[in-house]
Amino acid sequence: MADYYSILGVSKTANDNEIKAAFRRLAMIYHPDKNPNNPDARLVFENVLKAYNTLIHPSSRRRYDQRTSDATHISKTQHNKRKTQKEWSFTEEEMQRRQYYEKYYKAKQQEKARQQTAPPKAHSDYKYILFATPIAVGLLMLIISMFTKTPKTVPLPPHKEDIKTEETLPVPVEIPEGQLATGRTPYSGYFGGVRTFSTHNTLVINNATDYDAVIVLFDKETNRYLQHAYLQASYSIEFKKLPLTGVYWKSMIGRHWNENKLMAENEAIGAFDSIAQFQDRKRAPVVFKSDSTVTADVELVKNGSKKYMGSEADFFAR
Image (cartoon, rainbow, N blue to C red; front, side):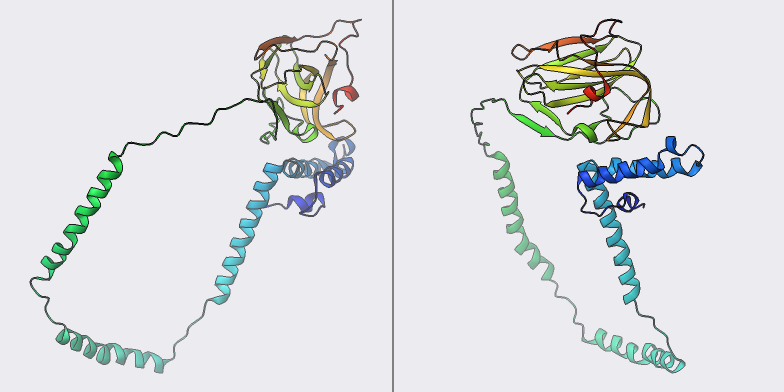
């Protein structure tokens, strides 16, 4: 198993900032775009990228550390077992003594044991049956009484639903080569955890274009990042548990997803090879009524309209 910490050149106690800094440094050296004439650079960069994607997510990093720890423990146990095993060898004299034991001494011991063994008493089995029967009856009655009792119902305490923020981390996903599927979160290592609220507010976004898109949601009141997802052309996606204060969204629209492309000054990994538009819907936020669902569409902004136009720097602003 490859040591991802060694690949990135960091210690096993490295924090996220140290891991990101190590990845940026190696990406500047081994990225295929910077080594067009070196066929080995792509393989090296893929190993660096795999190590980074594993260690930057807390859950996948814990699983990796557990696997490496278990493998080390098994290896040490097998080594110690081999080390403590004794090697036996027998001389001809020792073999003769063993044969004598088998032929004479052991035979005499077995004969002596047969002579001393007394025949069992005829009534011994009945004694054990009489002793065990009351115990079996008692256990049976106890089991019947346990299952015939009326179960007690404990009332649940009254629940008051208060709006609160829940910080969670998305489950890391393996990014397939080429196009991503709707619902994937390619920038979870950049934007951080998903933020949800104890509401039933839902935003449904339909992609009415021929392009794929990455949608990023922000809190209208605080401008904090909430959620993001990949959205394929002609697909729809739901963002749930959104704040009562409302949200707005930004989008990157394009074609041909490249999982090795670096964005946001090499801090974000992955982008479209062909980017059609960056959009910013901060001027048209979505406001919810109590526990409501709102629908919006992704559309290309017409030429000359600057109201919803954005930029790469604006899209990756946190």
